[in-house]
Length: 336
Ligand code: AQP
Image (tube, rainbow, N blue to C red; front, side, top):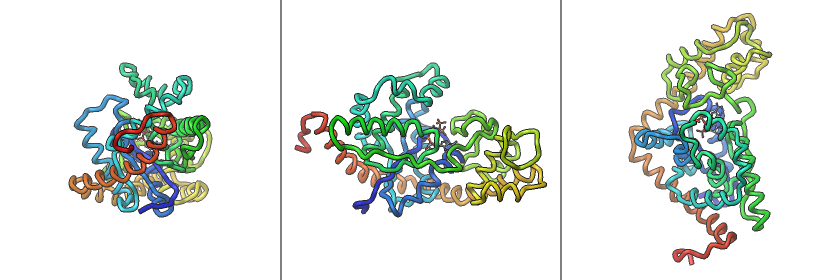
């Protein structure tokens, strides 16, 4: 169905109920590629277990994340939607790429340092090699473009380095991917601490807007958002909280920072926070309704997963057989 199109790949971990950061930084942009590119969007459950998960919850969240993809506008007829662990080639290529990735490179990854600090009792090897699994996810599909928030920029750079290194040794094997990072919503910050990324595993619920939060919850959380002691809605030093709200308001309404500043000139933070809360609640209302419908239809989600895994496996196998040949593995009986 997608012959000769360039490829987009991205994924989201089913590690919690998705946030406005996941939505504005990543998922909202996914559907804009569907006409022009062959798009693979994955629920990355293998990445999720680098941090200890409750198995029943991980399973439920995997279905929920797939349902959210569709509710956010990803049409399974136009995009390959699938679950990472359903395509074993991700693990297979990750191992090969592990052998072309340096210990020093992985040691420099800031996400590894942050997550090690947060999970001091479980600094496992998977957490360390997370970026090579991510490189495998992307390189397996020969993706040109990877839409992500800017926290993933460093991992993307490493994926490019690994691809270039492998191509340098064996000749053209992988397409070298580019990150697609949205300009104004590259990083949405916590509502409780506007110097910190909004993160789905944040323990403070007031810090995070969930895509599925009810309207009144969204408005209440924005009302409580930490700002500063001033009263003008404008950009400036020490105004990280207000600037975060301006990015969110701008992304949802399409208004520029100048337009937002003049719209709220002479009005206080209270009016602004209410306007941000209302526009976000309005934007997410349709997603919530569609999610409720889809998540009740497990059979349909399983059909989408099965179709996606089949389609993804076909593309993944093509790359894997190339890789196997290049590194010197003998042919398997089933492909001889
Ligand atoms: N706050 C954010 N602003 C912009 N983009 C964001 N993304 C995540 N948070 C923000 C982008 O969402 C995509 C999926 O993220 P992920 O689930 O793979 O992992 P993450 O980046 O580790 O997200 P979280 O929410 O912080 O998860 P936990 O708490 O489980 O570690 C990525 O493209 C990411 O850039």
